[in-house]
Length: 427
Image 1 (cartoon, rainbow, N blue to C red):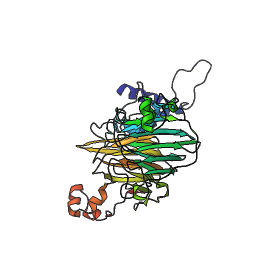
Image 2: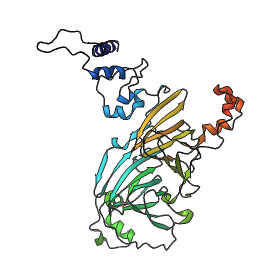
Image 3: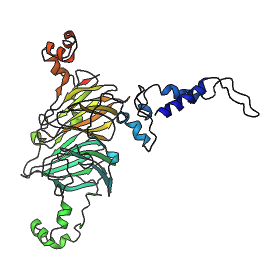
Image 4: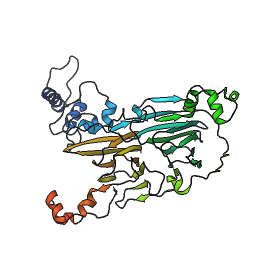
């Protein structure tokens, strides 16, 4: 580092001072420096270099990256370069981008997952992005765990049947949600030319054997004689039964001929929630909106609670923590910064972009800040029946001001100005 600094300084001085050197044959000496670049570099190194992808704080710490590095990733993640001086200790990676996931191409669409093997800190939640073309079907199946879905492009139809034969067929638009309890039989079909949605499961190790059960896969491993007998049809009709598991298959959009002889899953029994029609909560602190979707307004969602949060540019999801579950996140639009405090002096800051997922451990203190010039939208997921959070500001405001002032070393008059109402988002 010392040799590099001396060399850089010497080069910069050469650029700043009048040139005193032996003339090159046939050329006259310039009367002032010709290298503005060298001068700029010298001035620039007096300040932090994180925005340039270099781990240099401008206060004497750090040095340039000289070995192999992914410059694009460095620029996207300045906090990995040590930008936050308040970070401390060893905190596990709490971020995974779907762009780092392997995409599985299928007839009629694709899927890419984030599993516990990708993000080991996410023990409660696994997720996937899934895409269907018009008419394509995510085939008839069920899971050993609950499934939650959010449509973010196009339209899809979802169908489900419960243990009593009650059924539901619903068309969901962008912003709408479904929840299928563990073991409930269901299907998804794309209705627009291109359709895409987020899938969430309340089990981090989602791809463990015995988690997903596809109808074609099951019947391909069952004697046709038994299938025919169980279905009450002639075995000769099963000659074209698939022998492999398609997972997603091409089909056409047909009319809805569904009947409800044993009752329809509706009202409090409904497995869909039209969040696109929910106005949400305009945060008292200004700067954004939060839609809370949990068992309070979506009674079927007993194991997955969620929020759809929107932050305006520069807005902050206030300092808080969740006492009942870890928080899993998916970023839809914009860029963000968040610091997770995991206790015992350990904290780490992460930078997020659209398509990233994250997890904040159970009870860890954190915030989320919109660092873009556009609206930041993200989804929060909890393996719980309710969304629960504790606001730092509200806690301090509702504690005797003399105690808070003594702990924080601030005037008691300052403590008395803290807002007693939970702000959620700060403009």
